[in-house]
Structures are given as C-alpha cells and as structure tokens.
Length: 299
Image 1: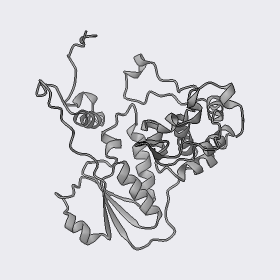
Image 2 (image 1 turned 30 degrees about the horizontal axis):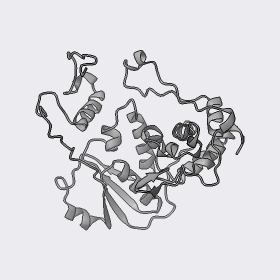
Image 3 (image 1 turned 60 degrees about the vertical axis):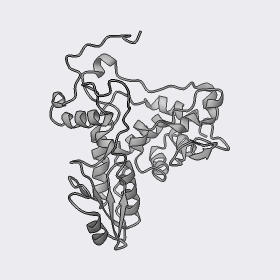
Image 4 (image 1 turned 120 degrees about the vertical axis):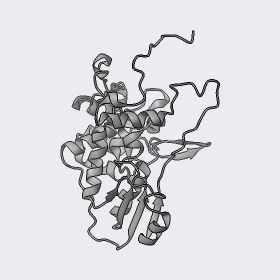
C-alpha cells in the first residue's frame, strides 16, 4: 500500500450531506463528494489484507459476504491513495459495468465484510468507488466499448433495468449485436423509475445509456413484449432472447384498514413522482399536500 499505517492514523470519515433545509428545496442528490485529501486518507485506511473478505462475494453459512461482483477493492484503494485515478478506473471497470449506480445505491456488503471492521470502523469503500467513476466521467476516461469484430449474432434483451443493461453490456463487448426492449418511455427500469433522484439522479442514468448507445447497443422503448411484440416474433427474429423483466407484482399486506384511502405501493408513488419531475413535481397524482403530520402519533 502507498501508506501502510493509514488504518492506524486516520479515522473513518463519511461524506458530508447537504443541509436539510436546503435539501428540501430540490430533488438533487444530497451527498457531497469528498475532497482530494479526504480520499487520499480514506483509501489509505485499506489494510491490503492477505485474505480480503471485502471482494469475495461468497456464500457463508447461508449468507453472502463481500462484494457480489467481486470488485478488486484493495487494488483500487491503493491506486486512489497514490492518486492514480485512471488506473483505478480501469481496475474497477474490469468487474463492474456500472460503478456510478452501485457507488450510490448499493447497501455496501463490502464494508460489512471489511477486516478493519473487526475492531474499528470499515473503510469507506462505497464512497471511493463512486468517486473513481465520477472522475472517470469528469476526465472523459469512460469510453464506449465498440467491438472490433461482430459475431453476426443478434440478441434481444427484454427489460432495461440493472440486469438487462449489464447483460447487454457484456454481450455487446463480446461482439454480439444487442437490442433492448423496454415497455416504459425511457430505459433504466428500476434505476429510472424506482430509485428517487436524491439517491440516483436521472442524468446519471441517461449518461450511461448514452455510452451504451455509442457502443452499438440499440434501445426500443414503449414496447411491451406480449403486447406490442410477441415472444414468438422475438424467437424468430433474434438468435437468442434474454428475459430481464424484474419484479413487477408488489407484495401486498393483508392487514386491518389496508383498503383505506391514501395507501399505495411504493413503486406506484416512486414511478409517478419521477415522471412528474419531467414536467412539474406537483403533477404527481400521489401527494401528501395538505395533510397534517403528527409527531410521535404512535405514543
């Protein structure tokens, strides 16, 4: 490592957040990026363990520990501590198709598996990961992956959520032509209509979609498989079909007064609220405007 005593000399520091009074005035992301000095110190807290559990992504006693995509966390932590950002990006891209998504919304099981967490606070892995990819975009290091040769195979991917986008990205890099079908008006699935802007700004999603389009991936939106195009047509026109539709049916809860007015599934609200941001936030059909909030009402 660039600085061997970082875990001894520096305490964990989390990213600052915007003041709540200012935060409620917009739907913008509320987390503030680290300074260069903070990043150098926080990344140097990584111990470069002989057996790093942070990136294992392994099952242990019925539970999964570490990074599910097996990010080379100690390697890019060292590169960040040495301020070698471009090489850190290359190492991150070897395992992660979309670090700007995971770096914002992933629950960070890597930090829970950090060896330093045995008797101290874990390394701020998630924040460092996000900063690596953001610097990549800031410096135009994130490039479209246009294959030198095409295989002649054409694959249809149904659904443009995280799974569909990742599958398409991998297949395109292998040289296959890929067309993604999405029933909504914009690609992204859960990333677009399931995660609020304050956690994942939609410009961040659009930015990645633009890179994928430049890589040769085709997007067909406003097209529902089974309605606008049949499964039989897909099987006939494409060499392979991958279903990445996600979970569309919410889980209901049979409790007293469940049918009361104003009770909605989360995705109903989140989708409507995100769509309204394109025009006017007040356009959302689900709103708490005019309602009174009683603090400690359960006591």
